[in-house]
Length: 316
Image (cartoon, rainbow, N blue to C red; front, top):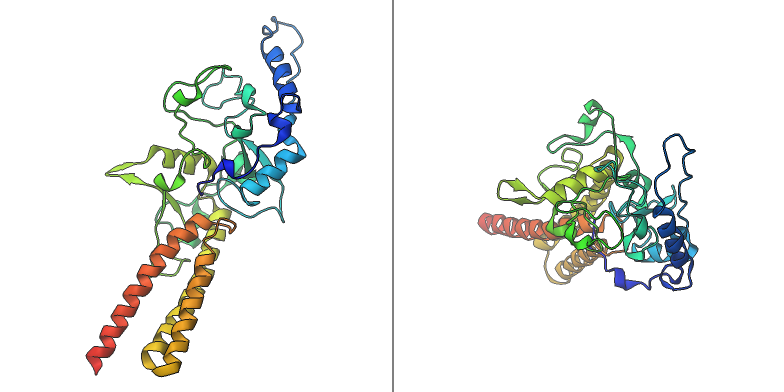
């Protein structure tokens, strides 16, 4: 999950215009939810249908904002599956508070909408990796229903109706357009083992002996360590490790060569390092994980170079 500036794209006119479908829908929704509850034995009232958030300009703006990736897990999925227009604050119900009618007044609010894959946004059956679990051990994990759906835990006072202060809620789920995920989520890489032995798991940041509450809730609510996602991230790291191996080969060549040959080997290594860095761009899938990996890879290469240089000098 990466931090996203919502101001990077223009808010869709259908939701922000005073004469747009969003404004009209909010007026109708306010009238609907102001009605008294049906009397006992009466025919249940039909659910209010929210449609404004599905507008073509809304979908287009969200695709641009999140580079056609899931706002939560950064998977590039549009070629193989549908996208969900996700309501950060759920519009129809709240899992943690059964009597809550949902944040209906935010159903067509641009700032409440995210672009999501179905595995993050819906409740689905998954096996989930635990810290320290090897990639092949997932077959022993229990399959359970997990995913956001209507989940929205808050740390303080929940807003119950239109006009209540949303800032007072302190949501535990990270909205990447409001809160920087890097302050709450972390990646741990071990360059001494291959990623198939050390799968790509996201973990909450630790504050001393206490795990970050926003990181814990976000990982759990979205199933960010579910089997399919972890396997794809791990495959991504394996591809990065191949490039890293090529850079090491160029370093080895440079250490054993001189003159123009050494210059060419160094240039190749620098070029491949630039190729790696380009994979941290916001348009790339798993860019935040890749960015964290790239920082560690640079340190690893620097230590590797120093160690090899010392070994060569010691042997002379």
